[in-house]
Length: 510
Image 1: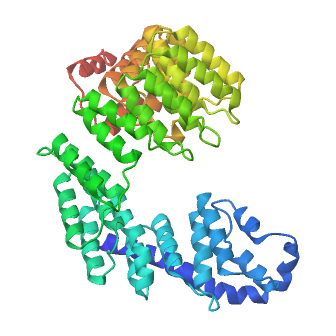
Image 2: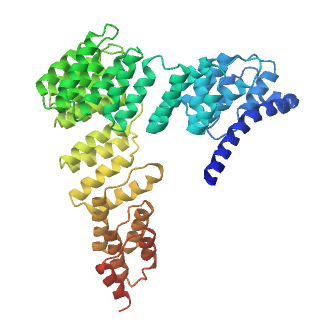
């Protein structure tokens, strides 16, 4: 409890220091304005000056204050634009400092949207506990009404049912629950925590409070009925009919896709296909999102004709086709076993791409490997390198799998070495089967030096196992090297040794 209080105190102090620092700093900076005025030219733009900061670089306060001290005008709307630009580039701390500075200027009036944005930034920078305190400190109900949803979303993201339910009760007391959004967030939470029965209770509460359902409300409700053990297809159809009869809601492609997915999971493929064809008629010619949801379901239903029809239709939507869209269509065609068609669309992407995204080529690379086409995979890999593609961990995982399956172990070892070098920056971990296969190969070859390096890397990644360490112990025994390093790794990993391990260790003293 003492440690918890200390941590909370430190966090509060950071926010307090940020707020006070702006006030005190502004006074001190005014006395040095003349000495800094030469740093900035009149032609410079404040937004570009602050946006140019790196995430960990200096505080934007001196730039803001110097701008004002030079006699430049500064409006709240401009500060809001700057803050949002910083958020887009994930510079959340700088965005928070800009908003905090604005809030401490007596001549600027803070509106409800500012409170909401600041609360979001407090969550990102300091956590939910500080966000709770900020929410309670907001002086007016309009500010609280604007800021409550980001805080509730924070609880949902953390899957904290208790806090979310307590907060909803508080919102009822304050009279702030007047639209479907907080109810939808609670339904998302109950779906994520598999408390499907509670989704129905939320809907009942909405009806009691005369809060109308929107499209998302119905979609979440249908998903809950589909997942609940006592419900199923009939319950989902009942909800869908209620949605159709709701004059305030227009049934769009998302609801039809939800219904089609229910039919598909229930094995009612014909009904699913019929609903998807209806969903096609609801698609927008301004946004491709719906096209690719339907393409994915058509692929799951083995409907290649539908996949290709929607793909061609999606091209009529304005704007560039994204890499994510190409990944979706390639994945769908690979799932359907049409590698030739996938290859054709891959070439189409290559001819139009502005930046080579290795994730797109990885889809085709994986298809080659899974179908035993290792030569085609190697050829594609070399081709992507020539095109400027930068392999990621998934590229190496696919190649390692292919090399191991074809017993091209020297190539597998090299690919694994390159993959392990990338793991500091990602959460990927190689499959245990592959890890062990490469270790067995190193033992067979007697590659003692690299085996030690390899096993150390595997240990550092938390992937050590008794099978791996026994291989390394045997290699130390063959090389007449003391196994102290191996024993240290076994001890750190808290792995219990078996009789075979003890026999190997006994051989060192024989």
